[in-house]
Length: 490
Picture 1 (cartoon, one colour):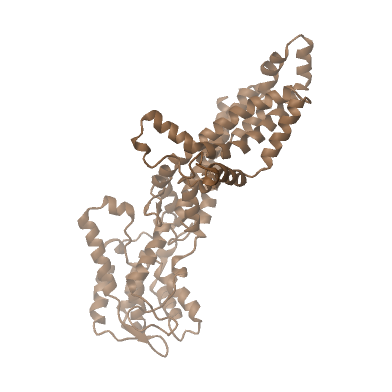
Picture 2 (cartoon, rainbow, N blue to C red):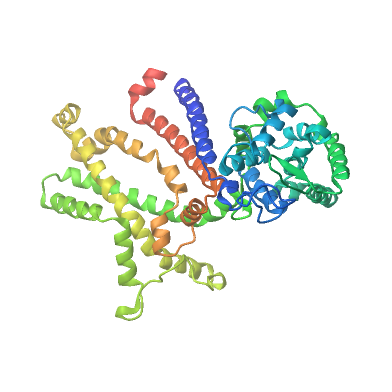
């Protein structure tokens, strides 16, 4: 049996890695805030490179956009980072292509300029070399602009929590100085022309900055695999530092808070569905062809054909509105506003009162299908040769069903139960929307609408991980239910 468990655990590893890669790929498809914002202009220090490329706000605006991109994990190359090998000539070529008179369309020059801004720390030293070269004076304005954005330091939530106030203030002051070092320039017939009387002093300040700290260290080789989008995503995932920009909170804190609401509702619905479905399926199979069996089958198929949103809406209309007098049940939430002041029995009754209709909506569809599976599986076993042999030897009906057939008929039910753990995590969105329950489903829907990729991906990874654990447990239960597996793996 140990060999069986180890083989299943080993299969989970590549499966989980595949899930991480797929989630990361989806994360990289998130729209770029720098693309989404209007006014992707060139020179924030002057009048702009052309009328179409004129900046509508200062450098601070673009720093905020770059902050969002970095916090979402989209600032780095996906799997391999070769930015550490950038040279002065590479940056000169980029700046020339983004300048007026390069022969490219405005949209193309905008794209090149945006990509240059996002190169980050590896581009700081090559840009400083461009600024130090008097022969490249026509590029000093755009180069200073790119320098200020590449050297800009993003403060993550973990930094705000762990760094001291002096260190945080020093970083912010440094970012403010960078913003003031942008050299004012204006468009020329070909390229740009510096019009800033303080250009020399600003160039000297940026050269001094480039010679300090991390910019003076060569980390190009370690950054190839360790400073990539995928490694950053995996690191934040396993350290719990995935951060939601729209909610301004850590992803796993948000999920845990909402899951408390959804979990007990889901687990109660699942327990009720299985407790009703298994006995009902057994009873229906043992009375095959009777009026009771036919009636039960027809009623359950009718219930199964009704979508949950229809049933939930009808229950809300019939029992939660005042069209026939005082509503029998509340129409929103899982407890009254003043329920915290109730006694423990009173609070539990209030919760049951609020949760009754949501539980009915969640439960009815599950137990209808599960009971049919149970009936069909047990009927197949009751007509098997070993069951007929047991009856021929004088075993009564209960002995045949519960002693011989039931365990064999549970194989399919175990397969269906493999997804229970992930179902407990999944938000019951339809029910939450109908009955105004502030649960996990609402949170994830809002995250999808807001394109909050870290929140969506964090929830997806948790749910699929629970699914893998559920499949592992199901595999172990197969060995319990089927002696052939135990004999095969020892």
